[in-house]
Image (cartoon, rainbow, N blue to C red; front, side, top):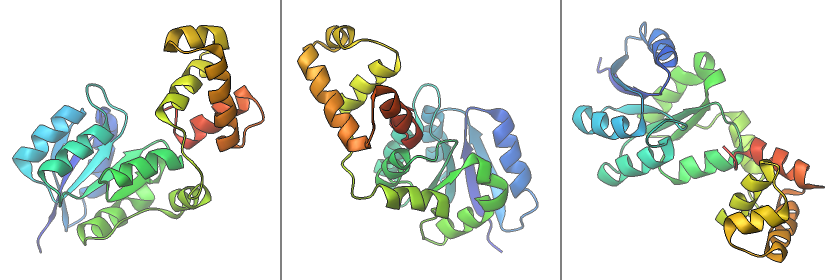
Length: 205
């Protein structure tokens, strides 16, 4: 039996150990390498050429989305499963558009990881029902622009429109216009509500 060669990338060694523990008794799988950052992911992938890579999103040095894009530029057939604590539709959509072939939450590792690895190795995508439902719920909605996310990050920090305008080198009127658009897109009733929705969906991660 040919084993599925797996690379695990996460900045928490305990999580990497937990993944290895889940995989160790599977006769058709083998962890061949580990790394703790996006840059390490690129270098280790290049040297090992694993069958499936498990990739965290939030890491020092280079995040998982950037690492996925870089790996896929060199190796378009790379099979990469995102492992993350964030279930929002925005990050999932960006990861899948960026080249990820699977997306599971870290809370699902014991339940879904093995199936995800086998599914992705077989050339299919793996998206658990919880994440798929989030993607479907917001499929037809307009995404926040990069500038709107910038404004919302400032709002999340408790800053006034005047200070936000100064930080971003725009006018107060422009900040207000962005906030109007943000609340319309998110279906939010006020600034605090908008920040909460955006955080849950993954805009402010």
